[in-house]
Length: 313
Image 1 (cartoon, rainbow, N blue to C red):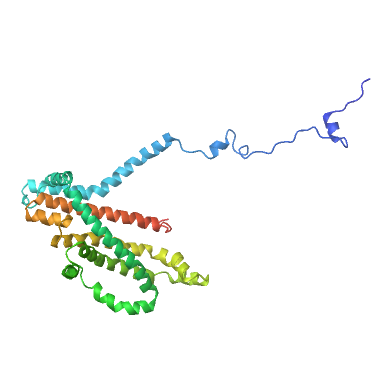
Image 2 (image 1 turned 180 degrees about the vertical axis):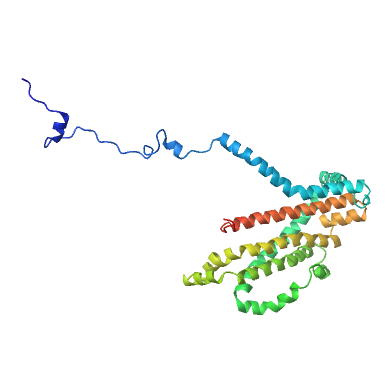
């Protein structure tokens, strides 16, 4: 009779014997999901087809939004084109938009528009940057430190109520008719919107935030970095956008008085030579530059104030 070998369960229960039963593997995260689900499906990335379908589904909304925003401009261009042709206005002084567009293309083709626009942009951008570089730090000091405000307040009240174009002859007499006088008048015109809005922004910071920051023993530089500047960005950029518009308008007026290049010079020379379509082409170029400049400033403002929560969210 053969000896009794025992079962696997008996061998497992015998003292001193090693277990031959394989360990049960732990349940993976994917196994706990629904049947048929895999780990890759848990973090599924939309396929290119799904992205295309999503873009196509948003296309009607984007078309309606774009049409709504451009409806007023299209209507203006239609009126501009049809009014001179129907005799509602004298086409000698207001030519149809198509003639202005052809004149604009001719100026762009022979390089006149590019050269004059470059000259105006260099002057305008230089004066604008200098004004922002001076006005923002000065506005922070005046808005935060009362002794500085008491010292400079009366002087600022005198100059900020003096129009920039009224001082243009003074700048020309003191600095000549070169680039220095034109950039200086742009600096003067852009300084006040940025300065006054910066002062207002600092003085209207939420006092609760300032007290909370001081209770955390923040130093003055850290207080400016963490509380004052972030809270002041929206109002400061309102002044910067106003300064951007002023930099172009004042410069064009200055170029009409004394300049040999620039969009203001182009408009003035076209008027004297009775080249009316070229004059309107220069005006349209100034408008396009102003809109592009404003949109660029809006994009920078959104980037710097991305921490703000929208009112609806």
